[in-house]
Image (cartoon, rainbow, N blue to C red; front, side, top):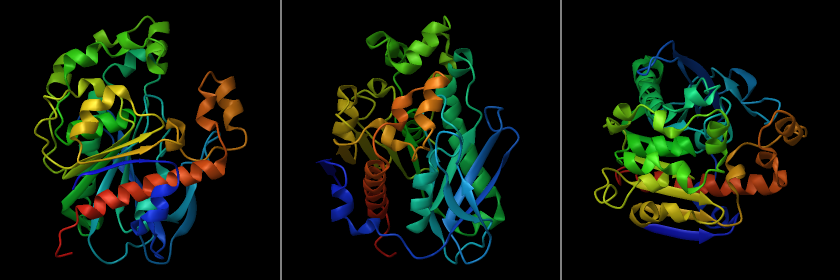
Length: 335
């Protein structure tokens, strides 16, 4: 499969019947580990096709973003489902930032597993976030496999990973795309005004304090059979030579103008989608009425709540359709 689509918002959803949701209820459960491979606690929120039952709950809600409703600890529907491990956002994203997509994937018949670990509070804590995210993804998959309730319903032959921003970078790494550490080192040189670069610079920190030994040891998780990256960061560190022999199918989704630094990744990916009428902010959930004001008052980025809710919902539909189209293309013919 080789798909390359440059489309305006809402077009994919109109042409792709795979985006239609099932009528089954959506269940949600949360559990975790006190210390994953990297030594920090990791929790996972699992969204899944469910039977009737369970208490309705709102997941992912906070002062800035609205939550998504599902039935807490409802019984799983019968069958075995493809699992999608999700790592959302940049350095300071809140827990369950990908709830909007996780719920949609569950409605389409997948088990969506969002990875949540404590976000770094200071720039110094963030230097090693890139390799910690990759280990968090593997820890989340192990948690899923070790719980009999989930192991009985997850098809271990079909496990995809999906990430947004820094999570997208981690998704590519665990899928077997090597990171060129020398290119990563100069990420902030090209544009010191990037939000995370400015955050680090204000604290007198830089990427050069990262644990480069750990970065160089990043490896593919052999259990991952496909990956989708949405607006991945550090894409210049995925060089053409490192992309020459992809281990598994790779999907790339970009919102807004195409990132020139992603040219090599775009050329070698199995499937690519460019949503020109969207923005990176649209990969987050719907904002509350006070979201932009709160971000502004707390020194955050109020543009995360820019645009109209209806427009963001359309973009969400387009991303859902692209992801489901890609995942369905991986389904064995016998299924």
